[in-house]
Figure 1 (cartoon, rainbow, N blue to C red):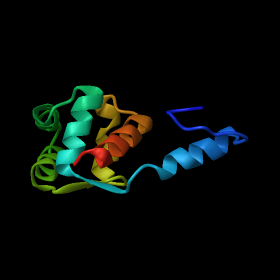
Figure 2 (figure 1 turned 90 degrees about the vertical axis):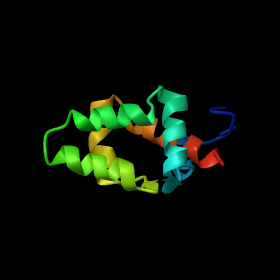
Figure 3 (figure 1 turned 135 degrees about the vertical axis):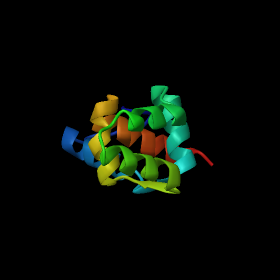
Length: 104
């Protein structure tokens, strides 16, 4: 039993594969920002402040991405590049996308 789901007879690899399949590929910007705040206490303003600490051209690229995107894709290169700098693990991103997908 894990995360409210029974995995009778499943090995760890099968459980992890199942859980990975729960992660949506894309969520809206609103869903992402709300889930990020709910799970990690990181607000939209925190994202802007973080982006402004980066060196150019990453600063400008991050700010454009944060301010103009309408959705976040799970494989977004910038998101995956900056997540560790914001103390977000791959599991954190999984949980953000899973939760975000449940927010209407």
